[in-house]
Image (cartoon, rainbow, N blue to C red):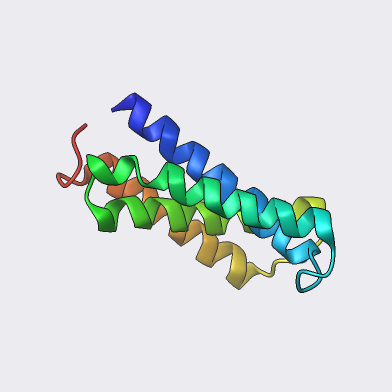
Amino acid sequence: MTRTYLILLAAILAEVVATTALARSESFTRLVPSLLAFCGYALAFWLLSYPLRVMPTGVVYAIWSGMGIVLISAVAWIWYRQSLDLAAILGLGLILAGVLIVNLFSKSIPH
């Protein structure tokens, strides 16, 4: 199961890189960020297909999208100085809490 989570983590990180590049591609008018976005999403979906073999689709997608949202927001906040107000931070905290609850307590996935 550890290997599955490592592959899922790699898919999440590829998606974070792709989304960060997409924001810098200026509607696909800049070559390098556009290529990074395209390749990052392709890699993310390819990697995501592996955990889907052994884990429920809803759980995999919840972890992937939830962690992606939190990490992309963190990258934008730290790296690009985009501001997050209290409501945004609280909402991101709830998303993170939801991912943790699913992983720690759900009987849908083997522990």
